[in-house]
Image (cartoon, rainbow over all chains, first blue to last red):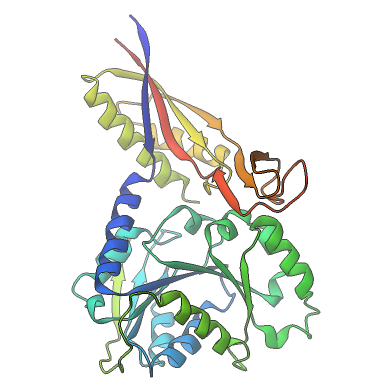
Length: 238
Length: 115
């Protein structure tokens, strides 16, 4: 019996990557700018996204997909922005995969959108491995989590494009050291853009809106006013 | 903990490749993993042992090669190996290196088959 070494050289997540690539192409063809959000549980993704959707809503057709292990509570909260929202319940799965995004979009008209936001499951580890076909990935860290979060979870910061520091209204109360946080970010992801926001007071949110608008520009069509409202869609996995 | 689904994806690739090789017995599968892949070696090793149970690859070994993070130093204009993913700076001149060229690998590199 002979033993032979066969070269394979295949990406383990090739299936996810194939789906993500086709999603990205589809979004690009339809002129939809896609932003995903990752963070630890409780960093304020939903409050941040609700405020962001509310601000973008008058100018753009926006919608959101939101992933959670269980419940559609976040979708209900986001629906208050009046943007169309769809919940993806992942069951036991700790992250979103491209196929889940694809299934969620089936029969749900992303073609008519200017921007789609995808809120990942609260988790700073697993989502880093999965491309969802997004144009921009935001990683959120709140001032209550500690300034060294990026160094504890370097991979997620490395796969994201921008850091958003949330709950800035609590910064003084918890003695948040902004410079230390920026040093930590810079050390794991040199050159990364950082925004400081408070969804509660609204501080810093307009700056971020402008940044997203500027990233979206380049071949995109003029914004139009959102008219449709669709909520209460829930998908289950697991 | 997404290593179990990663391990199952590895076995799917093993299955495809074994078929391509005429149904050969697979003795081992070699993976290359970068520190920025988001996969933990120990967790993947345990997950693989679980995933291969009661499959035709129950005896298939998992060999993991950990590859380093490499980035382009904007000052030296040379690719440098990064010593820590907590500190992505040039080991020679300590300049931050935004342009990472390797370290995100998560791939099946090769398989040992018997024939």
